[in-house]
Amino acid sequence: MRKVGVALSGGVDSAVALYLLLRKGYKVKAFHMKTKEDEFFIKKEVKKKVCCSPSDTADAVKIARSLGVEMEIVDVRDIFREKVIEPFKRDLLRGLTPNPCVHCNRYVKFGYFMDYVLSKGFDLFASGHYARIEYSDKYGKNVVKKGIDRKKDQSYFLARIEPWRIEKLLFPNGVYTKEEIRRIAEEAGIHVAKKQESQDVCFIPDGSLESFLKDEGVNLKEGEVVTTKGERVGTHFGYPLYTIGQRKGMKISKFGRRFYVRNKVPEKNLVVVSDLEEVFFSGLIAENPVWHVDVPKEFKCVCRVRKKSEEAPATVRLKANMIEVIFEKKVFAVTPGQIAAFYNGDILLGGAIIKEGIP
Image (cartoon, rainbow, N blue to C red):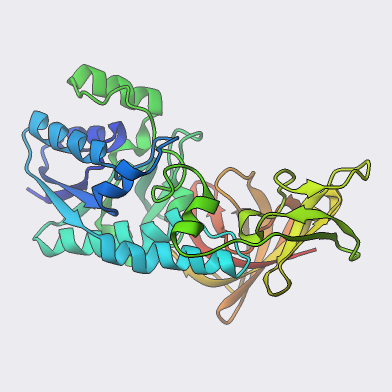
């Protein structure tokens, strides 16, 4: 009987993943991550449901007890700050728009946390992600595939996990829709069957990037908003608050046209805006790629530049530790710091960090 360590967050998805594995006969133990101290969430105004809060811990304990499994709480606060919070802050100040969930998955959840679980004698590590682990005849190994529920598919966030880990992963929920998962939870009598989903960044529970930076000792300064031609058109309230393609949140003079953030210049405290057409890109340059399968020096695939962006057919060319991606049609808001994820049909090939967009 294979032993499985399950990441139990306290939400319905991980609870059902645990339940499904028990039903399949696996020997299971639950593990719960603590990324921040409880006092942090008590002091903050939580405007949207986020993971890792004290209420989540209480729910995780209740779920484990109701399903008759042992649960261990694992303190990952130090590694979470080192690998997620500090790089997030640093990248914002560099003018990037980082994706902390992808980095958490690589370094914490499917990194330190998974290593801890496996070190306790478990054969496999499972979570409630909406993705699938299946064998691919084409690549001759297990691969990450999109979840059946396209609206909830979370494969994008797994684009940069280390490829060797795929053989050790189980995603029981990947073959179900969210509605089916909630129905299974209700039928099993799991008390979080109707619990609200986690949203946004867990360490910014009030949803305020400005508040986060202030707490981290960063005082934002107002600066000029200029067009790509250098014309001053307004004022911004701190360049880290803006991302490529953003239209609102700036004090713009009335010019009779809409402006969109085109790029940022941190050293000059500038936000550069343009007309909509200039925020579409023909390609991108990305760095530090992680490939889950062997890929040739040049290949065609589809690329997703954000979790909610449409997939774009593209040609990828590998160049040392950099990659060049050329789209068949221009793509909106290619954003430095975000993740470019690459797919062959349902199969996740890997991902890289976007360095710059190609006009």
